[in-house]
Image (tube, rainbow, N blue to C red):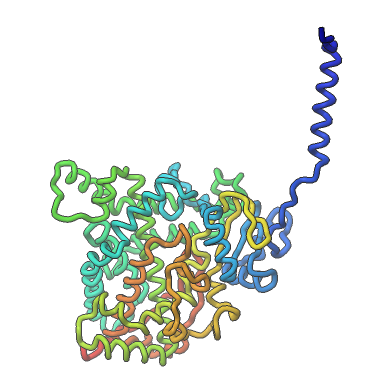
Length: 499
Protein backbone atom coordinates (compact mmCIF):
# COMPACT_ATOMS: atom_id res chain seq x y z
CA UNK A 1 0.00 0.00 0.00
CA UNK A 2 1.34 3.47 -1.02
CA UNK A 3 1.42 6.11 1.69
CA UNK A 4 -0.04 9.40 0.36
CA UNK A 5 1.47 12.72 1.40
CA UNK A 6 -0.69 14.91 3.59
CA UNK A 7 -2.71 17.42 1.59
CA UNK A 8 -1.03 20.56 3.09
CA UNK A 9 2.37 19.20 2.07
CA UNK A 10 1.12 18.44 -1.45
CA UNK A 11 -0.12 22.02 -1.70
CA UNK A 12 3.26 23.41 -0.59
CA UNK A 13 5.10 21.24 -3.14
CA UNK A 14 2.77 22.38 -5.97
CA UNK A 15 3.17 26.05 -5.04
CA UNK A 16 6.97 25.87 -4.84
CA UNK A 17 7.13 23.92 -8.12
CA UNK A 18 4.99 26.52 -9.85
CA UNK A 19 7.11 29.35 -8.42
CA UNK A 20 10.29 27.59 -9.58
CA UNK A 21 8.92 27.20 -13.14
CA UNK A 22 7.88 30.88 -13.27
CA UNK A 23 11.26 32.10 -12.00
CA UNK A 24 13.13 29.83 -14.40
CA UNK A 25 11.00 31.10 -17.34
CA UNK A 26 11.70 34.77 -16.49
CA UNK A 27 15.40 34.13 -15.88
CA UNK A 28 15.87 32.25 -19.18
CA UNK A 29 17.17 34.45 -22.01
CA UNK A 30 14.45 35.28 -24.53
CA UNK A 31 15.12 34.48 -28.17
CA UNK A 32 17.15 37.39 -29.43
CA UNK A 33 15.23 39.47 -31.97
CA UNK A 34 17.07 41.44 -34.59
CA UNK A 35 16.70 45.23 -34.23
CA UNK A 36 14.42 47.51 -36.15
CA UNK A 37 15.94 49.05 -39.27
CA UNK A 38 18.02 52.14 -38.40
CA UNK A 39 16.70 55.65 -38.68
CA UNK A 40 16.68 59.11 -37.12
CA UNK A 41 16.29 59.11 -33.36
CA UNK A 42 12.63 59.66 -32.46
CA UNK A 43 11.55 62.35 -30.04
CA UNK A 44 9.49 61.36 -26.98
CA UNK A 45 5.76 60.94 -27.70
CA UNK A 46 5.78 62.48 -31.21
CA UNK A 47 8.51 60.24 -32.64
CA UNK A 48 9.79 61.48 -36.00
CA UNK A 49 6.66 63.39 -37.04
CA UNK A 50 8.50 66.72 -37.22
CA UNK A 51 11.40 65.16 -39.14
CA UNK A 52 9.18 64.28 -42.10
CA UNK A 53 7.84 67.64 -43.28
CA UNK A 54 5.55 68.40 -46.24
CA UNK A 55 7.35 66.10 -48.67
CA UNK A 56 7.77 62.70 -46.99
CA UNK A 57 9.10 61.02 -50.15
CA UNK A 58 12.00 63.50 -50.22
CA UNK A 59 12.81 63.53 -46.50
CA UNK A 60 12.66 59.72 -46.25
CA UNK A 61 14.93 59.45 -49.31
CA UNK A 62 17.45 61.70 -47.55
CA UNK A 63 17.28 59.58 -44.40
CA UNK A 64 17.97 56.51 -46.55
CA UNK A 65 21.12 58.20 -47.85
CA UNK A 66 22.29 58.42 -44.23
CA UNK A 67 20.97 55.21 -42.62
CA UNK A 68 20.77 52.75 -45.50
CA UNK A 69 18.27 51.27 -47.98
CA UNK A 70 15.93 49.98 -45.26
CA UNK A 71 15.09 52.45 -42.51
CA UNK A 72 12.44 52.92 -39.85
CA UNK A 73 10.78 55.98 -38.38
CA UNK A 74 8.18 56.38 -35.69
CA UNK A 75 5.12 58.55 -36.28
CA UNK A 76 3.46 58.88 -32.90
CA UNK A 77 2.81 55.26 -31.93
CA UNK A 78 3.09 53.97 -35.51
CA UNK A 79 6.27 52.29 -36.77
CA UNK A 80 6.95 52.89 -40.47
CA UNK A 81 9.58 50.92 -42.39
CA UNK A 82 10.79 52.39 -45.69
CA UNK A 83 12.57 50.56 -48.53
CA UNK A 84 14.55 52.82 -50.89
CA UNK A 85 16.65 50.53 -53.08
CA UNK A 86 15.93 47.75 -55.59
CA UNK A 87 17.32 45.16 -53.16
CA UNK A 88 15.11 46.40 -50.30
CA UNK A 89 12.10 46.57 -52.63
CA UNK A 90 12.76 42.99 -53.73
CA UNK A 91 12.84 41.85 -50.10
CA UNK A 92 9.53 43.57 -49.36
CA UNK A 93 7.58 42.89 -52.55
CA UNK A 94 8.88 39.44 -53.50
CA UNK A 95 10.76 37.62 -50.74
CA UNK A 96 8.32 38.61 -47.97
CA UNK A 97 5.34 39.48 -50.17
CA UNK A 98 2.95 37.26 -48.22
CA UNK A 99 3.91 38.55 -44.75
CA UNK A 100 3.92 42.21 -45.84
CA UNK A 101 0.84 42.27 -48.07
CA UNK A 102 -1.58 43.89 -45.66
CA UNK A 103 -3.02 47.39 -45.91
CA UNK A 104 -3.31 50.07 -43.24
CA UNK A 105 -6.72 51.69 -43.66
CA UNK A 106 -6.35 55.29 -42.54
CA UNK A 107 -8.78 56.65 -39.97
CA UNK A 108 -10.04 59.22 -42.48
CA UNK A 109 -11.43 56.42 -44.68
CA UNK A 110 -13.19 54.55 -41.88
CA UNK A 111 -16.66 55.86 -42.73
CA UNK A 112 -20.12 54.39 -42.25
CA UNK A 113 -18.75 51.30 -40.51
CA UNK A 114 -17.18 50.30 -43.82
CA UNK A 115 -15.82 46.75 -43.76
CA UNK A 116 -12.82 47.11 -46.07
CA UNK A 117 -12.14 43.38 -46.08
CA UNK A 118 -15.57 43.03 -47.71
CA UNK A 119 -15.78 46.02 -50.04
CA UNK A 120 -12.29 47.11 -51.09
CA UNK A 121 -10.03 46.16 -53.97
CA UNK A 122 -7.19 48.58 -53.15
CA UNK A 123 -7.42 48.97 -49.36
CA UNK A 124 -8.53 45.51 -48.22
CA UNK A 125 -6.55 45.02 -44.96
CA UNK A 126 -5.58 41.48 -45.97
CA UNK A 127 -5.75 39.27 -49.04
CA UNK A 128 -9.07 37.63 -48.18
CA UNK A 129 -11.15 35.39 -50.43
CA UNK A 130 -13.37 38.41 -51.18
CA UNK A 131 -10.33 40.42 -52.26
CA UNK A 132 -9.12 37.57 -54.46
CA UNK A 133 -12.53 37.31 -56.12
CA UNK A 134 -12.55 41.10 -56.79
CA UNK A 135 -9.09 40.88 -58.37
CA UNK A 136 -10.15 37.94 -60.53
CA UNK A 137 -13.33 39.73 -61.58
CA UNK A 138 -11.45 42.89 -62.54
CA UNK A 139 -8.70 40.96 -64.28
CA UNK A 140 -11.13 38.99 -66.45
CA UNK A 141 -13.89 41.56 -67.05
CA UNK A 142 -12.05 44.88 -67.03
CA UNK A 143 -8.27 44.52 -67.41
CA UNK A 144 -7.78 41.36 -69.48
CA UNK A 145 -6.30 41.66 -72.97
CA UNK A 146 -9.66 40.64 -74.44
CA UNK A 147 -11.60 43.21 -72.39
CA UNK A 148 -9.15 46.02 -73.14
CA UNK A 149 -9.27 45.24 -76.87
CA UNK A 150 -13.09 45.28 -76.77
CA UNK A 151 -13.03 48.70 -75.04
CA UNK A 152 -10.55 50.30 -77.46
CA UNK A 153 -13.22 51.88 -79.71
CA UNK A 154 -14.79 53.49 -76.64
CA UNK A 155 -11.50 55.03 -75.51
CA UNK A 156 -10.66 56.20 -79.02
CA UNK A 157 -14.06 57.91 -79.27
CA UNK A 158 -13.44 59.74 -76.00
CA UNK A 159 -10.00 60.76 -77.30
CA UNK A 160 -11.58 62.17 -80.47
CA UNK A 161 -14.05 64.16 -78.35
CA UNK A 162 -11.12 65.58 -76.40
CA UNK A 163 -9.35 66.59 -79.63
CA UNK A 164 -12.51 68.26 -80.98
CA UNK A 165 -13.02 70.10 -77.70
CA UNK A 166 -9.43 71.39 -77.76
CA UNK A 167 -9.90 72.53 -81.35
CA UNK A 168 -12.92 74.52 -80.20
CA UNK A 169 -10.66 76.19 -77.63
CA UNK A 170 -7.96 77.01 -80.18
CA UNK A 171 -6.08 80.09 -78.98
CA UNK A 172 -7.61 80.00 -75.47
CA UNK A 173 -5.87 79.05 -72.24
CA UNK A 174 -6.77 75.57 -71.05
CA UNK A 175 -5.75 73.51 -68.03
CA UNK A 176 -4.29 70.32 -69.48
CA UNK A 177 -5.00 68.41 -66.27
CA UNK A 178 -8.68 69.41 -66.21
CA UNK A 179 -9.27 68.28 -69.80
CA UNK A 180 -7.33 65.03 -69.40
CA UNK A 181 -9.10 64.20 -66.12
CA UNK A 182 -12.54 64.64 -67.68
CA UNK A 183 -11.50 62.53 -70.68
CA UNK A 184 -10.13 59.65 -68.59
CA UNK A 185 -13.03 59.87 -66.15
CA UNK A 186 -15.52 59.50 -69.01
CA UNK A 187 -13.51 56.64 -70.50
CA UNK A 188 -13.87 54.79 -67.20
CA UNK A 189 -17.52 55.81 -66.73
CA UNK A 190 -18.40 54.37 -70.14
CA UNK A 191 -16.70 51.11 -69.21
CA UNK A 192 -18.62 51.01 -65.92
CA UNK A 193 -21.94 52.72 -66.72
CA UNK A 194 -21.99 53.06 -70.55
CA UNK A 195 -22.34 56.83 -70.25
CA UNK A 196 -20.45 60.04 -69.50
CA UNK A 197 -20.70 61.58 -66.05
CA UNK A 198 -18.64 64.72 -66.66
CA UNK A 199 -18.46 67.54 -69.19
CA UNK A 200 -15.09 68.27 -70.74
CA UNK A 201 -15.67 71.93 -69.91
CA UNK A 202 -16.48 71.17 -66.28
CA UNK A 203 -18.00 74.21 -64.54
CA UNK A 204 -19.37 72.38 -61.49
CA UNK A 205 -16.92 73.98 -59.05
CA UNK A 206 -16.36 72.56 -55.56
CA UNK A 207 -19.38 70.22 -55.79
CA UNK A 208 -18.18 68.64 -59.06
CA UNK A 209 -16.98 65.06 -59.26
CA UNK A 210 -13.33 66.01 -59.81
CA UNK A 211 -13.37 68.28 -56.78
CA UNK A 212 -15.00 65.57 -54.66
CA UNK A 213 -12.41 62.98 -55.70
CA UNK A 214 -9.56 65.43 -55.10
CA UNK A 215 -10.88 66.28 -51.63
CA UNK A 216 -11.19 62.59 -50.73
CA UNK A 217 -7.65 61.84 -51.91
CA UNK A 218 -6.18 64.90 -50.19
CA UNK A 219 -7.96 64.08 -46.93
CA UNK A 220 -6.81 60.47 -47.13
CA UNK A 221 -3.19 61.56 -47.65
CA UNK A 222 -3.19 64.29 -45.00
CA UNK A 223 -1.11 63.77 -41.85
CA UNK A 224 -3.82 62.56 -39.48
CA UNK A 225 -3.17 62.67 -35.76
CA UNK A 226 -5.76 59.90 -35.36
CA UNK A 227 -3.47 57.58 -37.36
CA UNK A 228 -0.47 58.48 -35.22
CA UNK A 229 -2.45 58.01 -31.99
CA UNK A 230 -5.36 55.58 -32.60
CA UNK A 231 -6.74 56.34 -29.13
CA UNK A 232 -7.98 59.63 -30.66
CA UNK A 233 -9.69 57.94 -33.62
CA UNK A 234 -13.24 58.35 -32.31
CA UNK A 235 -12.74 62.07 -31.84
CA UNK A 236 -11.65 62.62 -35.48
CA UNK A 237 -9.80 65.72 -34.20
CA UNK A 238 -9.06 67.18 -37.66
CA UNK A 239 -12.47 66.36 -39.09
CA UNK A 240 -10.91 64.35 -41.94
CA UNK A 241 -13.22 61.36 -41.59
CA UNK A 242 -16.28 63.62 -41.63
CA UNK A 243 -14.97 65.37 -44.75
CA UNK A 244 -14.34 62.08 -46.57
CA UNK A 245 -17.76 60.75 -45.56
CA UNK A 246 -19.48 63.87 -46.90
CA UNK A 247 -17.60 63.73 -50.23
CA UNK A 248 -18.24 60.01 -50.60
CA UNK A 249 -21.96 60.48 -50.06
CA UNK A 250 -22.11 63.31 -52.61
CA UNK A 251 -20.11 61.30 -55.13
CA UNK A 252 -22.32 58.22 -54.80
CA UNK A 253 -25.36 60.44 -55.41
CA UNK A 254 -23.98 61.11 -58.91
CA UNK A 255 -24.52 57.50 -59.97
CA UNK A 256 -27.06 56.09 -57.50
CA UNK A 257 -29.98 56.68 -59.88
CA UNK A 258 -28.08 54.74 -62.58
CA UNK A 259 -27.63 51.79 -60.22
CA UNK A 260 -31.28 51.88 -59.18
CA UNK A 261 -32.55 51.98 -62.77
CA UNK A 262 -30.17 49.22 -63.83
CA UNK A 263 -31.32 46.95 -61.00
CA UNK A 264 -34.91 47.44 -62.10
CA UNK A 265 -34.04 46.74 -65.75
CA UNK A 266 -32.18 43.56 -64.92
CA UNK A 267 -34.99 42.42 -62.63
CA UNK A 268 -37.43 42.39 -65.55
CA UNK A 269 -34.88 41.10 -68.05
CA UNK A 270 -34.92 44.32 -70.07
CA UNK A 271 -31.15 44.74 -70.52
CA UNK A 272 -29.72 42.14 -72.86
CA UNK A 273 -28.05 44.10 -75.71
CA UNK A 274 -24.95 45.31 -73.87
CA UNK A 275 -22.93 44.33 -70.81
CA UNK A 276 -20.84 46.85 -68.90
CA UNK A 277 -19.05 46.60 -65.57
CA UNK A 278 -22.10 47.67 -63.57
CA UNK A 279 -23.93 44.68 -65.06
CA UNK A 280 -21.07 42.49 -63.85
CA UNK A 281 -21.38 43.88 -60.33
CA UNK A 282 -25.15 43.38 -60.25
CA UNK A 283 -25.07 39.89 -61.76
CA UNK A 284 -22.66 38.89 -58.98
CA UNK A 285 -25.15 40.04 -56.34
CA UNK A 286 -23.14 43.00 -55.06
CA UNK A 287 -25.03 45.35 -52.71
CA UNK A 288 -25.00 49.14 -53.08
CA UNK A 289 -22.31 49.75 -50.44
CA UNK A 290 -19.96 47.32 -52.15
CA UNK A 291 -20.68 48.75 -55.62
CA UNK A 292 -20.29 52.34 -54.47
CA UNK A 293 -16.90 51.80 -52.84
CA UNK A 294 -15.49 49.74 -55.71
CA UNK A 295 -16.61 52.35 -58.24
CA UNK A 296 -15.11 55.15 -56.13
CA UNK A 297 -11.79 53.26 -56.02
CA UNK A 298 -11.75 52.53 -59.75
CA UNK A 299 -12.68 56.08 -60.77
CA UNK A 300 -10.52 57.85 -58.19
CA UNK A 301 -7.38 55.79 -58.68
CA UNK A 302 -7.74 55.46 -62.44
CA UNK A 303 -8.50 59.06 -63.35
CA UNK A 304 -6.13 60.85 -60.97
CA UNK A 305 -3.03 58.72 -61.67
CA UNK A 306 -3.45 58.87 -65.45
CA UNK A 307 -4.05 62.62 -65.36
CA UNK A 308 -0.95 63.23 -63.23
CA UNK A 309 1.20 61.11 -65.55
CA UNK A 310 0.05 62.91 -68.71
CA UNK A 311 0.51 66.31 -67.07
CA UNK A 312 4.06 65.44 -65.95
CA UNK A 313 4.85 64.00 -69.40
CA UNK A 314 3.70 67.19 -71.14
CA UNK A 315 5.75 69.26 -68.69
CA UNK A 316 8.92 67.25 -69.26
CA UNK A 317 8.47 67.14 -73.04
CA UNK A 318 8.17 70.90 -73.33
CA UNK A 319 11.07 71.47 -70.96
CA UNK A 320 13.16 69.17 -73.16
CA UNK A 321 12.57 70.40 -76.69
CA UNK A 322 14.89 67.88 -78.36
CA UNK A 323 12.90 65.03 -76.82
CA UNK A 324 9.66 66.64 -78.00
CA UNK A 325 11.08 67.04 -81.50
CA UNK A 326 12.04 63.34 -81.65
CA UNK A 327 8.57 62.31 -80.49
CA UNK A 328 6.88 64.55 -83.08
CA UNK A 329 9.09 63.09 -85.79
CA UNK A 330 8.16 59.54 -84.76
CA UNK A 331 4.44 60.40 -84.84
CA UNK A 332 4.74 62.10 -88.24
CA UNK A 333 6.77 59.21 -89.67
CA UNK A 334 4.67 56.34 -88.31
CA UNK A 335 1.18 57.89 -88.12
CA UNK A 336 1.20 60.87 -90.46
CA UNK A 337 -2.36 61.72 -91.56
CA UNK A 338 -3.71 58.28 -90.70
CA UNK A 339 -6.21 57.98 -87.85
CA UNK A 340 -4.47 57.73 -84.51
CA UNK A 341 -5.62 54.69 -82.53
CA UNK A 342 -4.45 52.37 -79.77
CA UNK A 343 -3.10 49.72 -82.08
CA UNK A 344 -0.70 52.00 -83.95
CA UNK A 345 0.21 54.09 -80.89
CA UNK A 346 1.27 50.98 -78.96
CA UNK A 347 3.90 50.29 -81.68
CA UNK A 348 5.76 53.57 -81.16
CA UNK A 349 8.99 52.85 -79.22
CA UNK A 350 9.96 56.45 -78.52
CA UNK A 351 6.49 57.33 -77.24
CA UNK A 352 6.61 54.30 -74.96
CA UNK A 353 10.08 55.33 -73.77
CA UNK A 354 8.78 58.85 -72.97
CA UNK A 355 5.98 57.37 -70.87
CA UNK A 356 8.41 55.11 -69.00
CA UNK A 357 10.82 57.97 -68.37
CA UNK A 358 7.95 60.08 -67.00
CA UNK A 359 6.94 57.27 -64.65
CA UNK A 360 10.57 56.89 -63.47
CA UNK A 361 10.93 60.57 -62.56
CA UNK A 362 7.33 61.17 -61.49
CA UNK A 363 5.73 57.93 -60.25
CA UNK A 364 2.03 58.64 -59.59
CA UNK A 365 2.19 56.97 -56.16
CA UNK A 366 5.63 57.78 -54.67
CA UNK A 367 5.24 55.13 -51.95
CA UNK A 368 2.97 52.88 -54.04
CA UNK A 369 0.00 52.09 -51.79
CA UNK A 370 1.59 51.56 -48.35
CA UNK A 371 1.60 48.02 -47.02
CA UNK A 372 1.21 46.64 -43.49
CA UNK A 373 3.04 43.75 -41.85
CA UNK A 374 0.57 40.92 -41.22
CA UNK A 375 3.16 39.17 -39.08
CA UNK A 376 6.59 39.88 -37.65
CA UNK A 377 9.36 38.99 -40.07
CA UNK A 378 13.07 39.53 -40.62
CA UNK A 379 14.10 41.54 -43.68
CA UNK A 380 17.74 42.29 -44.57
CA UNK A 381 18.81 41.31 -41.01
CA UNK A 382 16.29 43.68 -39.40
CA UNK A 383 12.93 43.07 -37.74
CA UNK A 384 9.70 44.42 -39.18
CA UNK A 385 7.16 44.01 -36.38
CA UNK A 386 3.58 42.94 -36.96
CA UNK A 387 1.37 45.97 -37.60
CA UNK A 388 4.16 48.20 -38.93
CA UNK A 389 3.46 50.19 -42.06
CA UNK A 390 5.78 49.44 -44.96
CA UNK A 391 6.58 51.99 -47.69
CA UNK A 392 8.49 51.33 -50.90
CA UNK A 393 9.87 54.71 -51.97
CA UNK A 394 9.79 54.24 -55.74
CA UNK A 395 10.34 58.00 -56.15
CA UNK A 396 13.73 57.62 -54.41
CA UNK A 397 14.65 54.48 -56.38
CA UNK A 398 13.83 56.23 -59.66
CA UNK A 399 16.18 59.12 -58.81
CA UNK A 400 19.04 57.13 -57.30
CA UNK A 401 22.47 57.70 -58.86
CA UNK A 402 23.46 54.18 -57.80
CA UNK A 403 20.68 52.78 -59.99
CA UNK A 404 20.37 55.25 -62.88
CA UNK A 405 22.92 57.20 -64.87
CA UNK A 406 22.24 60.95 -64.73
CA UNK A 407 19.03 60.22 -62.81
CA UNK A 408 17.58 63.75 -62.66
CA UNK A 409 17.63 64.26 -66.44
CA UNK A 410 14.68 63.37 -68.66
CA UNK A 411 16.21 60.91 -71.14
CA UNK A 412 13.73 58.51 -72.75
CA UNK A 413 16.63 57.00 -74.73
CA UNK A 414 17.63 55.04 -71.62
CA UNK A 415 14.58 52.80 -72.22
CA UNK A 416 15.03 52.24 -75.96
CA UNK A 417 17.57 49.46 -75.55
CA UNK A 418 16.26 48.24 -72.22
CA UNK A 419 14.10 45.26 -71.29
CA UNK A 420 12.61 47.08 -68.30
CA UNK A 421 8.83 46.93 -68.22
CA UNK A 422 5.99 47.92 -65.89
CA UNK A 423 5.06 44.42 -64.77
CA UNK A 424 6.82 44.27 -61.41
CA UNK A 425 9.72 42.04 -62.45
CA UNK A 426 12.38 44.79 -62.41
CA UNK A 427 12.72 46.28 -58.94
CA UNK A 428 14.56 49.38 -60.09
CA UNK A 429 11.41 50.43 -61.99
CA UNK A 430 8.15 49.87 -60.11
CA UNK A 431 5.60 52.60 -60.98
CA UNK A 432 2.74 50.09 -60.59
CA UNK A 433 4.21 48.04 -57.75
CA UNK A 434 4.90 44.29 -57.69
CA UNK A 435 3.74 41.11 -56.04
CA UNK A 436 0.19 40.21 -55.14
CA UNK A 437 -0.71 43.87 -54.59
CA UNK A 438 0.50 45.11 -57.99
CA UNK A 439 -1.88 47.65 -59.53
CA UNK A 440 -4.55 45.63 -61.38
CA UNK A 441 -5.22 48.54 -63.75
CA UNK A 442 -1.69 48.53 -65.23
CA UNK A 443 -2.70 47.31 -68.73
CA UNK A 444 -5.49 49.88 -69.03
CA UNK A 445 -3.49 52.77 -67.58
CA UNK A 446 -0.63 52.39 -70.06
CA UNK A 447 -3.07 52.32 -73.01
CA UNK A 448 -4.79 55.49 -71.80
CA UNK A 449 -1.58 57.42 -71.19
CA UNK A 450 -0.08 56.49 -74.56
CA UNK A 451 -3.25 57.35 -76.50
CA UNK A 452 -3.90 60.69 -74.81
CA UNK A 453 -0.28 61.85 -74.84
CA UNK A 454 0.14 60.93 -78.52
CA UNK A 455 -3.06 62.83 -79.38
CA UNK A 456 -2.02 65.98 -77.56
CA UNK A 457 1.41 66.06 -79.19
CA UNK A 458 0.39 64.92 -82.68
CA UNK A 459 -2.58 67.21 -83.27
CA UNK A 460 -1.56 70.41 -81.47
CA UNK A 461 1.21 72.86 -80.80
CA UNK A 462 1.19 74.14 -77.23
CA UNK A 463 2.51 77.67 -76.65
CA UNK A 464 2.41 78.96 -73.11
CA UNK A 465 0.07 81.80 -72.16
CA UNK A 466 1.58 85.25 -72.72
CA UNK A 467 4.42 83.74 -74.75
CA UNK A 468 6.26 82.26 -71.76
CA UNK A 469 9.32 80.06 -72.21
CA UNK A 470 8.47 76.35 -71.96
CA UNK A 471 12.02 75.68 -70.72
CA UNK A 472 11.05 77.48 -67.53
CA UNK A 473 8.03 75.31 -66.71
CA UNK A 474 8.11 74.59 -62.99
CA UNK A 475 8.32 71.02 -61.71
CA UNK A 476 7.33 71.61 -58.09
CA UNK A 477 5.37 68.73 -56.58
CA UNK A 478 2.21 68.53 -54.53
CA UNK A 479 2.47 65.48 -52.27
CA UNK A 480 -0.53 63.24 -51.82
CA UNK A 481 -1.73 59.72 -52.55
CA UNK A 482 -1.06 60.81 -56.14
CA UNK A 483 2.02 62.97 -56.75
CA UNK A 484 0.79 65.94 -58.79
CA UNK A 485 2.19 69.20 -60.08
CA UNK A 486 1.89 71.97 -57.53
CA UNK A 487 0.63 74.39 -60.18
CA UNK A 488 -1.74 73.27 -62.96
CA UNK A 489 -0.25 73.04 -66.43
CA UNK A 490 -1.73 75.86 -68.52
CA UNK A 491 -1.22 75.83 -72.29
CA UNK A 492 -2.83 77.40 -75.37
CA UNK A 493 -3.78 74.66 -77.87
CA UNK A 494 -3.02 75.51 -81.50
CA UNK A 495 -4.31 72.95 -83.97
CA UNK A 496 -1.58 71.92 -86.42
CA UNK A 497 -2.51 73.02 -89.96
CA UNK A 498 -2.06 69.52 -91.40
CA UNK A 499 -5.02 68.31 -89.36
